Image (cartoon, rainbow, N blue to C red):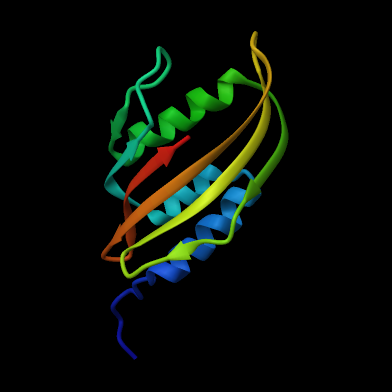
Length: 126
């Protein structure tokens, strides 16, 4: 048995990400599955978020900023992943009440690229 760390397959990463995100545990998913130099790409820049966020630490901070903007989480659903050789996609449905903005429902298509057993990029489409 090799002492080298086992590298997760794209399917294993996809399954674990779905498992954690379905529980709302995004930060654990990021710390466990994302590369240190990963990139997160939003559909467009907003006053709250840049279009592109580079680096795991910055992505974790972005998640904390999002969480601070949410007053209440109502529902979260994550689809089964569609998995290719080095990428996968899921849809995420989120029903939240945003501070000062009221309740909103959104569904995003989330596409993840994997290299050397880690997520190297995530991109969101509305």
